[in-house]
Length: 629
Image (cartoon, rainbow, N blue to C red; front, side, top):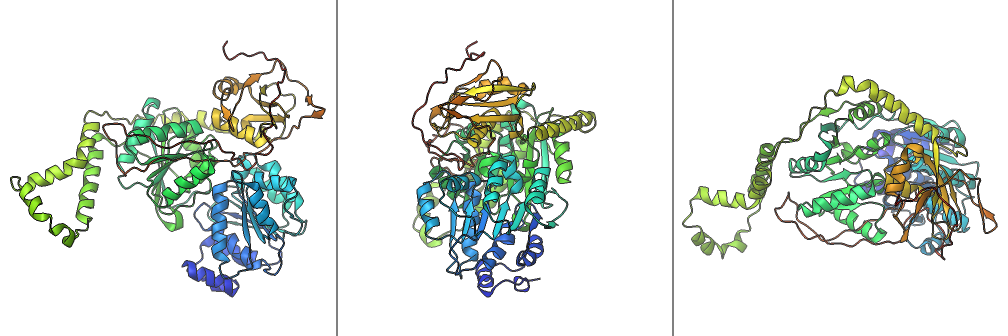
């Protein structure tokens, strides 16, 4: 089947030809003919890299009436990066339809400029949920004429806590509309959206539901916890031509690992929620241009990274929610190519591998961390191959040859080769000279740990299910006081993101959230009290220090300034920032630490972050906890 057989307009087909597309992918073959119909609610389940953007983008551009200036198409996605990527793709699809105006709206940039763009005419709007809610609150966007709503990466938006925002947005759109939902996995929350907002949708699943990309090889390595970073370096060194992503759970860990890799001579930079949009754009530009070899990222920051030819995804730590593993691994093996997803675990985490295997319907291979001798051999082979492939510029080097030959006259051919190889190779010999093996036996694993692991999996799923919605009087929850509120630009999504990122928690661990003008409250599982106090208390939110205390008792919703605090839970603001320093050449460890360059800003970023910082009032609220105790 070709694109011309799918029923698309000639202008759209011309754009496809310009892009070099030939044969539609399976999800495109199934989706496009259906989405061209007047009534076309749709649920598409397919992994990242299978062509989902074109599957909804081509029919959306095809269906939009170019002579109608009001917003007809709305695409909602979880992060700024994905928002920008989709916008770029749609502009390519609409290249020969000059009247189609596509506008991206997302946090971390001037909302007034986005308001102006919408006012000038936007037939298609691509938005992150938080920023779109901002625009709705300001009455800067009209959704009454929307005919098509696309929810891309629906599972990730719900996992990030955007359920309330999505409900609010969909209520602003007409009842008579087409809803197209695309997702890599199908948790029950995604199914509920389908039930509540769609009418007899066509459901297409490429492979089994939640199944991983068959072109990805999944390998796990069991190491002692103290050897995790050393094992990471060995995996990188064992793949000299690696171009990959390293995933960590929190912003702090992401920053720490990236800094360590930089000091050890690797071409690596971080991407996480404490970095500005300009810095994020800088690093992503370098990564796309392949002048950056390794991107160390959090799950939220990496959403929407659509970069071809990523060879490896390395899970420095597994995600708290196993469904995120599918999104991580999907960054590689795009467009039918092969890729590897490598996982580092300690000996107590084997049950997580079993849980993921059930989720993606794929078996992991147990790998051994490469030995020092193996790494040196691989690096040597790679170096020789590069030397042999190097182009010799005969005319340019000719005038220098007499001097060069004279300098090497006393050395034999064999000695010259040894010295040239040693220029690059000695550092690996020096570094790994006395290195011990790092692999441990994680195979007590699959049988003895299985029952405990399955119980743990059921317990985690139960906790996640319980975590949905508000809780008002739950003895399993601890209530916390937070020293900042709406006047500091805080909203439920921003607070949820701060807690989850700093304390390595998921949204299911957090209960009721109340944002008041000068301070806030939230509830969390009792088991995470110490972690929240130790890791979130004293952290920074948009340049303001955050103090968190346990309240003496669970109070009724308070009133402040005559207004009762809200009790809604929100989603992550989608606010990811990035900062990056000087360039480095690709390469392995170096004997002396390299200089670390780059600065990290504190620009506003969350697409769900609203409000102005006009001052903070004291709460006068007593607590039973003192961090110095």
